[in-house]
Length: 183
Image (cartoon, rainbow, N blue to C red; front, side):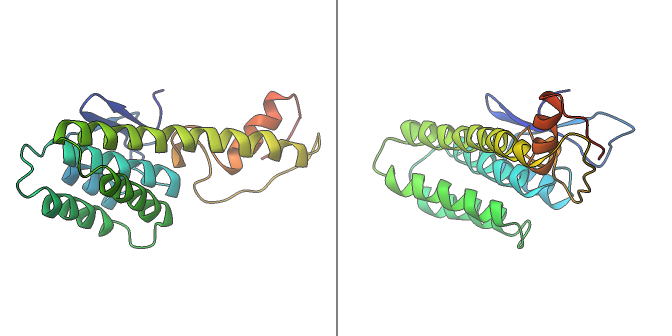
């Protein structure tokens, strides 16, 4: 199984969560609108995964810009398109704000360099999500005792994140440490 979402050169590949568990289908998004539709149609779910998707959507959109002539307007159109997808998704707005800040801090660069900076920022958001989830698991496993039963709800596993899981990341870490738990 591939990660929930990944950047593949100039394409975002994500698992279609609507098809699970019957089928493992991957969707390829090549522009901002396709990423936005994937968020709207719940192809991708879970706040952290949606945040990563939004960052990738910005990077894809900027990669498609071929002139600095209307760069600011086009960038804000990209942001607005993604902002409309899930008005309650906190990670989405957090990721878009980071991408906006990166754009503003690097606006004086040549377009090719700006594209690279935004792509790198989106990849950093993905990497940081995975690392944060691993740390949640590492520290959280200490709270779980051998033989405990755990009840969890909502999207809290690897599919809800860039690939490790929040609450289920804790459970994974405890399991890998040898703790016998019932979920």
